Length: 236
Ligand SMILES: Nc1ncnc2c1ncn2[C@@H]1O[C@H](COP(=O)(O)OP(=O)(O)O)[C@@H](O)[C@H]1O
Ligand SMILES: [Mg+2]
Image 1: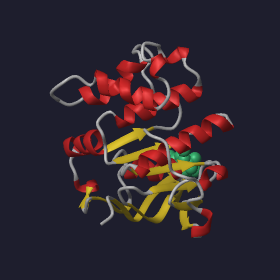
Image 2: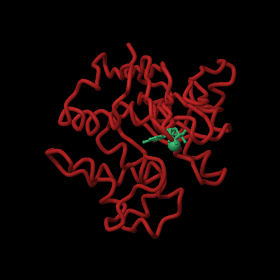
Image 3: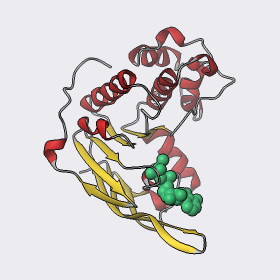
Image 4: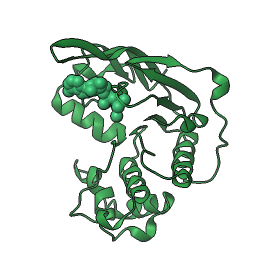
């Protein structure tokens, strides 16, 4: 069974007095170990789709099933719990808190719920794994865009979520850093995390096990031969 299943997922907005579907009856399944990527140009509905999948936005129609449970039926408290325990999110753009160090930022989702133990060691390991262990004591303003994105990925993984959701995790990054981040996500998926990402860059299509394109809210599955050309390897 898929871990995450989006069925007929639709979000309607009204703009300038006219209704339109930012996401129009999207169907996606993501299982453990899958690396699902969705590409589409700006404004095609990618963030709206991810925000519904992450429980941040209520769909107009359709369902978001997590382990067969419809998360749209959850109350606020249950959605918060779902988000904190089951998902790691890398939001679009810069999302680290400026007044906290990189290490503290990574630990924040861990502290949002009462947990036993100390997350610091795990946070340091994650920072090492994403290649910025040396920056643990730095502040976000001292980091490059790629380093901030890596820190956000480490933060998304601190609670060891079964599902990682990333919104344009390589946006504004140079080619070399893009490859490193995509390899990192690919490795994570290879280790059993379900990974769902959206990106506006077609070159990230080479990664992942399943690829979709999004155009004006309509999601289309791309032919299999375009997928899965990257080799999984390395350790995370
Ligand atoms: N709250 C909103 N109200 C009205 N329109 C919105 C709202 N949020 C997003 N949109 C519109 O929905 C479309 C999809 O937006 P978005 O999901 O952010 O696209 P993408 O992430 O692919 O760039 C865009 O045309 C955007 O202007
Ligand atoms: Mg977006």
